[in-house]
Image (tube, each protein chain N blue to C red):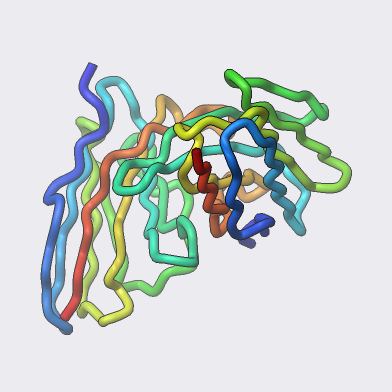
Length: 109
Length: 114
């Protein structure tokens, strides 16, 4: 079953922060985050495994709450280059990596 | 190291035709996954192949099929095309397709069905 992302779209000014949420109805083994810029292929950001760890990538970090079957992506002091569509992908006991519908982020000067 | 290569980049077909899409993974990668991307639906999982065997399959009709060759290259076939099959088809490769591995995506094949 497809994870649900919220919000569907976000518009920010440079320097502002954003949080993108991802929730699943299934017990999860891992959560993946990817970013896709317009007309380009999705690019890997990070993977979070069971254990509630938080990982970081530049000013982008994420957390994984396996009990709540949720993950959140945190974008701090956003830059123009952060614009794009963010996808979370979840892996459950089926072993399939299933992506959410995406969250479109637009950062304006 | 070359990335994931998908051919062709664009395709225009008519309803009822069939189409074959090709994906060459990164050298050494043995897992290839296919996704369908449409506006508002995100990335829908089609199937995953590992060492020439289909390891996982999404919820698509039997008109969608695939295969993987001994050199890990993969093809995806859609028969009896419908208007709703118009989409960007992405393939992604990884070393083993393990749940803790990152995927490397190709640029996709944009299929338009008229």
